[in-house]
Structures are given as C-alpha cells and as structure tokens.
Length: 381
Image (cartoon, rainbow, N blue to C red; front, side, top):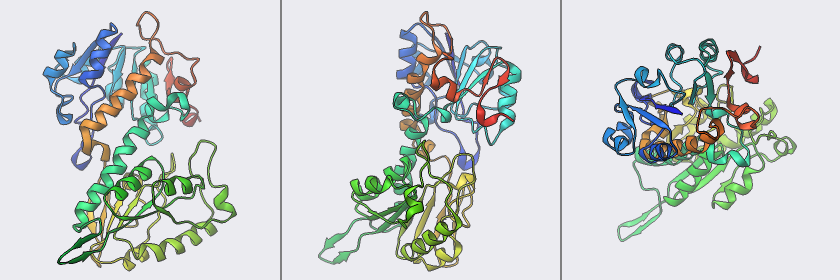
C-alpha cells in the first residue's frame, strides 16, 4: 500500500492553527516494516517536534507538497481530511482519513464521492470495545481536558492548592467542571491533582459514580428525567425546558462561588448548549475564569468568542481558545497516530494492499463515501 502523510499546518489559521501530524516516525517505522511505501510531506511533523530527518530514518520518503505526496497514494492520512478541492486531485479508489466534521461541511462528502474517493471520518468510529484503541475523539479529548485546566489555572493567576505558610494560609481554588465526558473526566482528575476543590455536573446518571471515583463532588438535579438522560450510545440526551430551568437554578447558585469553570458539553451534530448565562457571569468574583471547550460550536458560555479570551465588566475572563489538542501537538500526534495505526488493518488485505473490509462494522460506521456515492446514514437525504 502507498501511504501519504499530509502536512496539515495550513489547514486552519490563527489561533486554530494545526500543529498535529497523523503519523509519527514510530508509526511510520511500523508501516515500512510491514511492507508499505510511506511518503511524508516536508515539515509535516515540525510543530510536533518530529523532523524530516526522523521520518527519513524511519524509512519514509519526503515529498515537497501535499498534492505531490497524495497523487498516487492508496491511503491518505490527515488530521483534518483537507478540503473538497484537495480530494479532487486524489486517484479514483483512494482512501482518506481525518476529522472531517461532515455534518458541518456536507459538500466535502459530495466532493469525495464525485472523485471516487473513500472518506473515513475518524470521529464516526463506533464507540464499541473493539474500537477503543482507534477512538480518535477520546484520545484527543483527554488531552483537551487536561490542557483546559492547566490553561485556566495559568490565566487565573492564583494558587490552586491550599498552602499553609508562616505568612498565612492560601485557600484552595474552587474548580467546577460542566460536562463529564472524556474531556471532563480528565479535567476533574487534573484539577484534583493540582489541589483544587473540585465539583462537576452532567445530565447523565452514570457520570455521578465516575465523578465520585475521582474524588470530586457531583452537582445535579437528580429527578426522574435525570435518570433517563442518556442515549444507548452513551451520549447526553436533549433535556426538557423544565429540567434545564431547574438545573440552571442549581448551577447559578453554585457557580457564583467558583474560581475556575471548565465547560465541555457538546451534543453530536448540534450547536453547543448554553450552560452559563450572562446573569450567572455577573455573580462570579472578579478574576474568575471560564474555559469553554465548546467555543468552536457556539460555546457553553454566553458571550464566549471562538479563538479569543474576553473579559466581562466584572473582570471575569471567558476563554474561547480553539483546537486544544494541537496545543500539545507532540502528545496529541502520538495518540492520533497510534489510533490510525490500529485502524489500518481494517483497510489492509492479507497481501498488504489497500482493501477496506466492508463487512466490518467499524468501517461501515466511519465511511462517508464508497464507489462514488455518499453512504453514511447521517449524510443521506
């Protein structure tokens, strides 16, 4: 199989710049050992501290551009999946991987179908036991949750743990995590490690025990609707207006006492729900910080601005920075690359050629296109 590893540095701009790479020298070494021909685009790993020389030592050849690397490739590895114009230049029958956000950009899937390219949206890999080692969303969200607390603590500018000193006692920071998915759980663990008094909330009942296991206190309206607030796939359901009102009242009283708030709530395919209103922000102490990991999809915090840190009239900072995993590009790339390495056998025949296993539920779950048609259920009709 001919594999192309793209340089995605120009895929996003400004604060959202992409520093990750979809294959590392270690994973490339494994591909070459398995008999694959790997081409890496010049500078692809630079932001993640992987040099072109590292890739050459691993057995890859270096291409001058994404177009040159991908032109004859059977499988194109990318962080973003690039764009419609790029896939038009791929050979018919090739595959391309990446985090493609297809519901936000349906024209991308159409372009892949028109080019006869099979697009594998890695965020759609089913969350089943067998696919855990391929779960791109979990590996990247884990780092985002960690970084959000570290960043929030830095912006907060005060000590996180309690300190007993000869000059007096420093009170511990109070940290509130809203949304207890992968990112939220890591945020809780990180806040606890840093010594903050940590609380968390989520509408899914199963998260209560997870929060307690990390040593944090669970905050939620635990009525009958709460007990049924989780889909079969483990995602949060859209809650009723009545429940949202009750939860907002509880949150408002709690959030007024917090120093750092991390919001992580996202519902697949929808705008981020607003969890923190302007009225709540007005009750917070000057110097408090809110880190909104959902800023890219509208934000959980009212007034959040994607890509910026804004300050309210009462000196509360709302952090809407983007692409959190890329802020830890080396670790994020290592995880992303291992996820794809574990995915690769599903598109590889016994003789090493490119051949997706269309009977496999993981392939069926993440393939957007096949044989010139858009095939994923979420994009049909």
